[in-house]
Image (tube, rainbow, N blue to C red; front, side):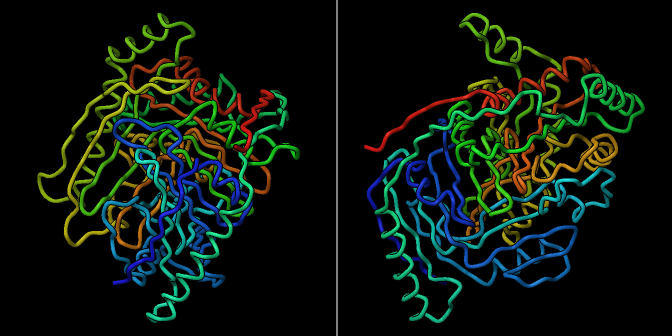
Length: 472
């Protein structure tokens, strides 16, 4: 078992620290931009991966070598090569893989043939392997560097590399830090194109309702995609900062993999694994925030008392309980919160919490396979819902509705659902929003819900925000 080298450093704002590295290839920021009582205590910066793993339709790139196969199996094999000790009472990500698992990885788990156009050509999976991580404890306002020296395995050489890497990072941290956001660039709203018209989306909702009435499914999540060119005068990191300001979220993230950038303000935890304890926090049920205190409370009250939204949430909770039961110990899967109200900058949500205890012979990748992709963004029954999504949505989802996060070399994991997210490939920018369609869904209301969910994303693009956060 390998023990990482740990060095406490002076605590600074994680966003400001990350500004030093945002332009570096492989830089990952797992950003608890909005701390909540039950999550969002830690933020992480992972830098300079010693190898990357990407997959597209079964063609796998690992450290520059091309192979074929199942990316989940190869990831599991690679993680087993680097056994890392779990250091207690410290931020949880101490070295491992970080990046994203795209929605279209579902083809490796179920026999679902994508029918949609794959015009954006995002990798299905994109992960870096990190020996160098900065962990921030936002509660205690403390920070540490973790340096394992991997992938070197010989003890003395690995320890020497760990020291050199830690010293290199300390030198980098001495650079000038600033998260000043001064670009006044804004996209023309008319330049943003959707792959659905309002009428076409409403027709898609009616088609899903027909499948429900025919007994095929109980619920399916149908999304629309928006696309625009990233303005040349607006960097992807500036765009992330705008989104973060407008819509702070406990599972925000910024991933820079050169040609592919993910800028996410996700409120939804997909799966957390800490030692053997499992937690998922599915979201289903949305209302906009009100412009006055009275209207805001009215929206929240309407959501809490909506039979339709409760039914949607309960269906997804049941689906998730079944998924987790495939890899968790008997009778350990519990619902510890059902349809609790959580309020964010632009929306109210109903959030449930499902927990379990992982079987002794299972690991993080087994857990991921058992529940991927999340039920809250597919439907129930999940496989048939995914088939209907592939039939109705015009384009492959790419990263959207997949997952962002980390898997520790010590076995821990934390991941979010990729929603409220910009996905950028070769400066082409996409963002999506969807909603659960059930038997009594109103097509126009479902369409308007997708617009509510993209409000912060659209504003970040179309309004010229000038914010200055000067260096102390």
